[in-house]
Length: 178
Image (cartoon, rainbow, N blue to C red; front, side, top):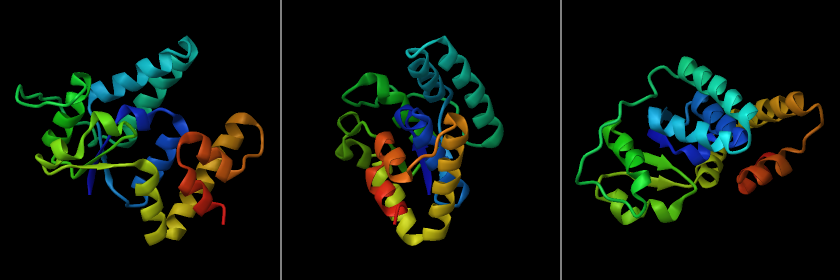
């Protein structure tokens, strides 16, 4: 399955790490555009110059680790979404022959419009829970790796359930904590 990751799931870091960890485990093939990555960088910059610089490094690493994921932007004049600033995400999905877009912005990506293009809208928590139910060992590996990275970064022990809940993945956190 080919899936475009919206900027809102690439930033925050934990959600991105879990989604890309699942992609590494074979859950899907991730896709994005340069504009999606730039939206991520701008979102990080709102929290300070240091985060903008860190996101620049993270984006460079993302491009290096997933060299085939970036889809050249090609926007058609006949595309429409409620928020015109999100049309580029739909255009990326179409250009990349994506099956779906993972986003938390449900109102900006109406399923009736996406279905006209043969594209699904997926909620990250629901998608990851379904993958975890089908591939529990793989998803537990992803959860442990993400938890360890968060602990290393913060210098504190982390509870996987709380960590994922704070990131917007409450159902996955509950599943991985059992």
